[in-house]
Length: 155
Length: 104
Image (cartoon, rainbow over all chains, first blue to last red; front, side, top):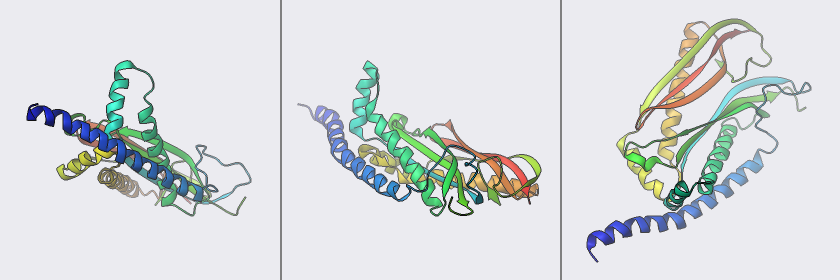
């Protein structure tokens, strides 16, 4: 076997295997971290409505933002390549989007940790393209922003 | 300066409208960050360099919007929106816009 073939085939395979093992571990750790932090904010919901029901009176309001850039590992990128060929749902990217959105919302909440609620929460997603070709494929930025409000008193 | 992304400032009365104010910035990623991100791409996860870059850009766009509002004599910007668009490979524009108002 020629050295070019070993490098040409071996390097991508190693990267895919490394991506599969390390990527899955990072993802699991990230989801556990998200779940733990979300538990803290159970009483402080992020709402997509603009006005709260009458009994709640708002004392102060401030803009809160949170953003994150997340990318998938090489293994998922490789798998999704097949999916692009046959069509259908790309499940390997679903977790990417999910963890980015949940992380962004959490960061928004953490930027104003003592607010009672976050109203008119919006999620903005954009893809990050790399200067060096399609390397940025599977990399997204999610921005969550809303108005952090403090109630006059606990409703 | 009060910023909200709803149409009013809760608990305050809007007494004057100054119209649309906006701030934007176009940022390119620098090579070092792109390289580090390329490595991080193998295992996936958060690309902290890019997160920081975009947060800085958004803060810059917001402060430009606020500066414009202050020039008009406003003390709040309501209905703030953020958008991102890529203008070229590796460069993106971040825009913040809202309505400048004066509240009591």
